[in-house]
Image (cartoon, each protein chain N blue to C red):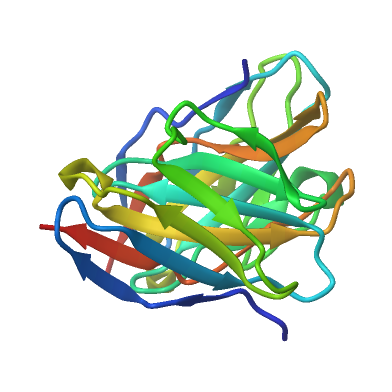
Length: 111
Length: 114
């Protein structure tokens, strides 16, 4: 079965400092990974996906198949980055598709 | 920009009562999902729905749960006899089928069972 692990429940960094939110996965198939973000009182929204290799709001994430990781990084944190971040794995097979989420990391950016 | 909408935003119900949570997915999407998030815990998959039938369900999705697409636009989650532990945020999501599919989430319905 697929699994997504986010080891840090809470991460607090100062504004301007680098940020790295860790995500590890286990999946027997070819992984498709995503980062979702939930700002205070807002809906879950897609931040970025590994397949597009894009940078959104200064965040990047590289899929490392050898380490089965998809860590989210930003070189200089901003206060508006404070939110819950969820790493998610899209799985398919047997006629079923779905997303498996990690437990989330609460990122707090201190001024 | 199209979005998934859920109603109501907050539902309070008595234990043992039936509740129906409603969702309007994005119109050209083919896959529909329900997730829940108990306070302080992670987002958990409940069920996926495609072509008018359940394609997968988790262990959480037992006989008290059911889903329906009654009229081609709404997608509902029914909980027949609510328990205290059903109190959670319920998220509906929809997506186009594809290898890089993106699930769009609704804003959630907070269900409180008292």
